[in-house]
Image (cartoon, rainbow, N blue to C red; front, side, top):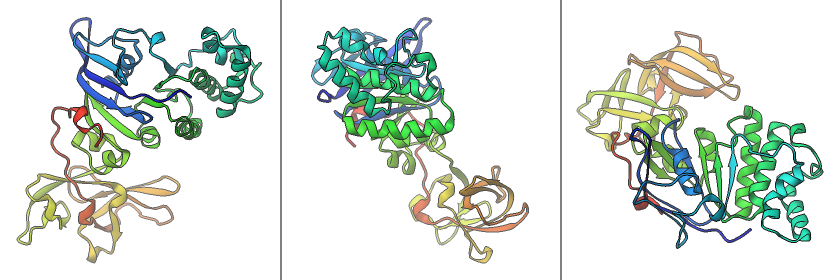
Amino acid sequence: MSSSVSITLNQCSRTFTGGNMALKPLDLQVNAGETLVLLGPSGCGKTTTLRIISGLESPDIGGQVLFGERDVTALPIEKRDVGMVFQNYALFPNMSVADNIAYGLKIQRLPRAEIAQRLDDVMRMVDLQGFGERRIDALSGGQKQRVALARAIAVRPKVLLFDEPLAALDAKLRDRLRIEIGQLLRELGTTAVYVTHDQDEAMALGDRIAVMQAGRIAQLGTPQEIYHQPANAFVADFIGAVNCLEVLGTQPDGGLVVHGGALAAAHLQGVSSVYCRPEDIQVVPVGQADVRGKVVQSIFLGQTQRLLVDTGGTTPLQIEAPSRQRWPNGTAIGLRLPAQVLFHPEPAKAAVNAKEVANG
């Protein structure tokens, strides 16, 4: 593969017809060789950001896109040295697998021997050996996505861009291809930007994740930072399951009074609510509990089960418990919430300037 390159967006916004600003002015640095995932709900601006990086969209006046030190703002996609993988594959149905993969190589007018070698290399990488003469319409969805991926990497682009490539696949195939794409990106070392609304996909693939909200970056960080140290309530709620406990008051010893009990959380004095993840809550004997409640539902998930526990608040707490235990509805239950698993994200606010935290 060709050497990787950094990507820099300076004050890139995008306004569409009618004054609809799909992307607020955005500063973003993607490090050379890393995989950055743009994660968020529909309409948050993640695909618009990807299209600006690719050259399929132009930023509003004043926006700038750099690949390394090279200003590519005014260049179309075919001159940016990028490879793209789309959700709908975008393959040529009248061509064979080999012809689809080699299409970009022929456009580059490479020698036949080099084209043959690259075909062999990339088909091995994506596990398509022996499929060269197969017609596209004879392939499964997963095989078609592998062809699209092989076509993108065959031309050895400096940047790989993924626009929800696994969204149309069934869950089991999506999980398998997610692992394969992650392994491939580590092998290639190419700078990649990957758009998805799937949190598991983002966690598995991203060196860093940019969580987007209403045209801005709400938080930029490693998967661990995004999950365990969410910047605001939106990020905490969007990434995985989370519990929010209303703080009703403070005990003389500093404990935070919540529905069903009290929490020792000296680092969270003065907050109006406390957050924690379901897997961090421990089930303990009622007499040893920080919080007490009753089981209102048990959802069997195979390896674990999700308990919904009524502690008197407006929303039941979610608890992750071993799958072999039984918790009939109405069972009294004790819960321990260690101080180190409790957090309070900052109130939702204007998104961070991503450039300030790009290397954080």
